[in-house]
Length: 103
Image 1 (tube, rainbow, N blue to C red):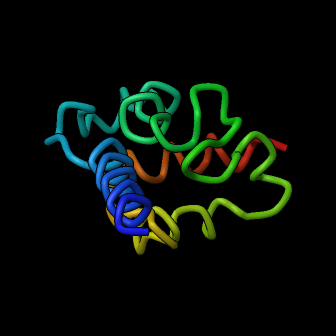
Image 2 (cartoon, rainbow, N blue to C red):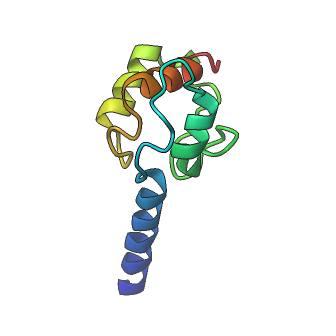
């Protein structure tokens, strides 16, 4: 039982570390925000490189379930084990718009 709990805690720690972190290396350049690149840098470790999901839910059809504003809200506030503010400002808006078009 203790081994399972320890494994769960370690796995969660690794997943959260992979989802978060990093400074502003994705850039905050308003004109040059590449949402797919930002997603790959900040989100794909949990949501999958092809949006297929993994630790986080699949996002390949997220636009059929959530609006851009809903997605921006989740990015800003976090949800479940996803930490808040992995992306902010124009970067968050660009990724939310890109994801909202995934239907």
